[in-house]
Image (spheres, rainbow over the protein chains, first blue to last red):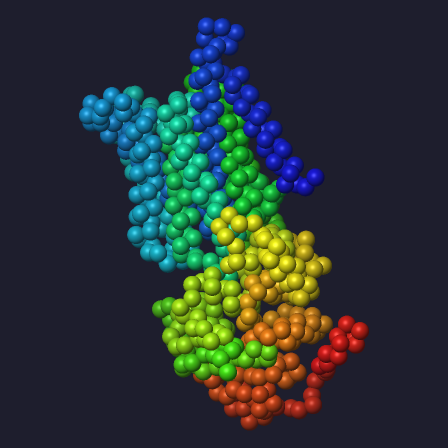
Length: 330
Length: 261
């Protein structure tokens, strides 16, 4: 059995066991027949949201890493995560200030938040492309993305400070920026599912372009790849997936960075193999991280971003050290 | 004749950089190995890149009677293959996967590798003598081995013209000879081969025609015997040609079929 097959078996087992744990573990007693169905429905939607956000972030990570030919890159490098976060926070504040009274009753906050994330991600993308131009080099795109990311996160910090003046709003903003799927319900999942599904399917068609791009822009071009076009569309798919994930679960750290990097050793570097594995692996990772937030005994809920950060950062450091020892960082 | 590669009045400059090529005229005929010579910085690599469309250029480039300027990138990649001097490919891809990248321009968006693609990849693995490396990781190969894999990737494109930038610079003597034998076999199949070489002795032994570049212009072009001559060498490189000096190499008769050096 190849490492790739073994990896897929492990991924499916992780996902299935994570899903079972997500349904069985958490606040609420399942032995109470009257409440059991209600608990299971709530946990089911939470599970779906955890899977979708993890899958989208890891898939976006594969695309960005392919785009920059850098296995240590992440969607946050091009400022899209920060843009989506800013869009989300801005919508939360706007909701509190004006929108709640002005919007029709069928337009609840949880529906407006994802729209804010999408608008934020797309706006950050438009600014990035506007500043760098269509044929900018990778370094220009990276540096511009980094600067935009810093700018957006500064504005998020500023808005968060304003939000603290009102307790509920402040709590909502902090919960959103730390990340979590505990309050994400069917509306989140039903909005994100087609977005993640369609984008992932279309992006899969670009995986062979990214394979050729591993050879560098000049060689890729000589082999028939329209590099600026691939770069533009890959950024669009990565931005959309990131926005969908941020809309569901806020800023869940390290998923887009760690999952593809860890899977690469098992399924290889070809994007057509890595991308589907990252969808399942990222989903399983966040499902399990969400289970962990429920089993650690605390009086308040542990944000999901804290768990993924605690797991992701050390794993990433190990991978980084290994890559450095093998001279793969140069 | 209209076959092969015909370049007329080619000017080329890097974006926001100085002009490198000035009115280059060049003919590389099918069935022949044409060597591109010249001192460092004379524009040899830039000329190859301009022909592939990697460096902006003006002038006419025709391949087998067709203007390349009007073709999209995929059509161009199916006709003209390029082997760079150094690759940026550092991924842990299997050699076979690298060679399969050569079929990119032939495949549909979600299309799997078809029979024709697979046959081209198999042939390329054999012709570039990398069959034995097929399941090794590209990033773990030596520079010379990587160069042969890149040749295989170029052969897999099925292009009728092959442009190579110093393909023998990292090869040991045996593999350099085998590479020349591969180029000769390609030419014999009717391909157009244009290869940048530095070693003038190598040019004499393995090329049919030569184009001598100097300062971004063609100094002289023609049959190898007329180009690698004391007067041209002195004028271009500022060195005197010493006939009869140096070692010669040849593949053993059993494997070489008479290649001498």
